[in-house]
Image (cartoon, rainbow, N blue to C red; front, side, top):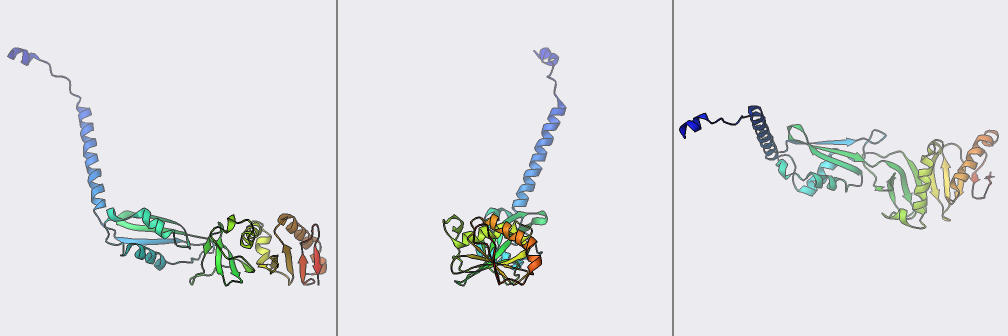
Amino acid sequence: MLSDLLNMRLPNVRYERISWIVFLLITALILLSAVTRKKNSFASETDVEIVPLESGRAMLGDRDVRQNLLQAFGNTLEGTELADLEVDRMERVLETDPFVEDAEVFVGQSNALHVKIRQREPILRVLDNNGGNYFLDNDGAKIPTSSLYTPRVMVATGNIAPYTADFQEKKRNTLKDLFALTKFLLDDPVWSTFIQQIHVNNANEFVLVPLVGDQKIILGSIKNLENKLNRLKIFYQEGMPYSGWNTYNSISLKYNGQVVCKK
């Protein structure tokens, strides 16, 4: 029996495989330990970045962002355990601010909490007869005025329906038509720089106020909008150079196929 045991050949042991397995186990333990230490550490600071508007300015400040977080969470975030930071909730809270289009929150190096804010970009300022004073962005979201900065954008005045969150879904609504008209004008390289104001009169007609000249452009409704503005463009190119920019008080595009001018 003893001789048989002594003569027994032990199975070949692949030391390279064992070494690799041990290495993986040690690496996993190190990573697990690092993650645990990270979760048990504390936020060192809060860094706020506000991406500027196209003008290079901002309608909200660092203080506004921090105040929103303070109101929502009840305390400053510095010194909070990283495991207790509700990053997703922070983003949702910040995105309820009407100035904010998107918020990104993450923990970076040295346990710093980074907050990146992308603002809503105003395209139109509305000053209606009901006392409304606000901006609309490219999606039709309402933006309040800001004490920090007033964007220089196209202005709309007059008999405009009050803002509601679902104004674009309404069948007949002057704010809906105004918004569609604004986007059409801004998409055209000529009208986007030439038209500075849109007025809605008591007959719910749209009147355009150009940057150059004293005349008012009576558009009427926004039906056949492209055709109306093409007629106006041709008139400006072929007729206005001969008559002069200040000859007419009004230019009407309401009538099909016509440009009616009054002195």
